[in-house]
Image 1 (tube, helix red, strand yellow):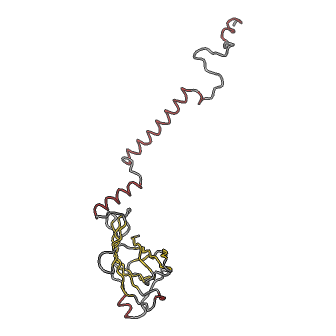
Image 2: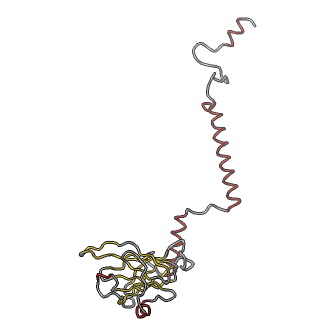
Length: 214
């Protein structure tokens, strides 16, 4: 090869290069055509995976939070609730009714997540407030387990007590949540829960704030 021909094939000295010539040592991802090809390939793979998932499982489901919200709203409409959790003290004297729509439905609730808990208060076995058992709260519900929250009157300031959790047939005290057992036949006759009931022993310093199924 003669020198003139070799000289003609060299890059121009002004830094420009001929059309179509690839720059020497340029990284792969810095080449526009290569980068577009790579991105397009990744998008294609993702689209294929989504298509396979939809084909086998059906359309993608809404987020869990949205599904729960829709279920609760439908339950509220069906049962005439203005709020998901309602407390009604204006019914039978001495009885507080708690109505709730929740999702997923707890054990014992209706299929749409609706629950009712009725709490009736009457005289307990205690002879003084210090015993903490002058009030018996009879809890009726179809739920397997319930949680009751009381407010304790501490010198005019109400403080939330620890939740009291009950299963059907149980008798517990608000103070400490311990199981209470009748000491004699008279107490057993007056304070034995029925099939769908449980009982909470408290006193006048406790005010029932909420009840829900677990």
